[in-house]
Length: 183
Image (cartoon, rainbow, N blue to C red; front, side, top):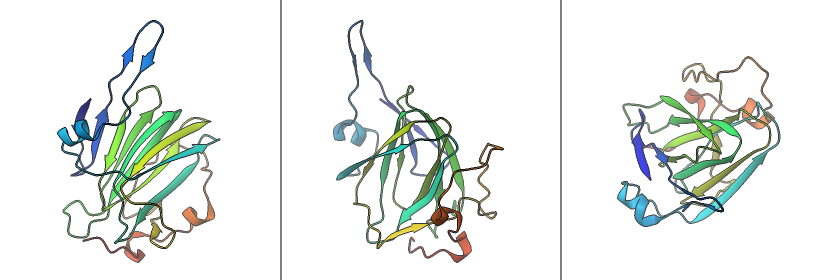
């Protein structure tokens, strides 16, 4: 397992390793000891899986306010996605900056997102499955959404096709209207 730093401080791309023999393919999907060795000391307490049927489905950008701010470990298990991450830490020099990560089921890479960031994804294929580890449970009382098309952030979603997007995500507030309590 290798860790690659990204332009967003604290966000890491994890390159997983696996064993591929003639009759068997095996991968250790998580080891606290190994992740701790990469500097990721988060204690994950809950796992989630999301399945998305159609290409060009856009979800997010989601985050949870304190006290249930979430750190996440995200891996695309099947299909391909662009995973977006936006820094919402108001005291960060990178406040409002974003990165996109191309995650594919066949690559087995993960992205670690510490608390203080919003995240969302765009499916690049049909039949996508995404696995999440979180250090806090999902809570509708603390969940917030940042608009994926906020011009002050300017995420460069690379498609000319129309997105499949929920009303909740389409009508989410922009950064300057956002109810976010991150420092």
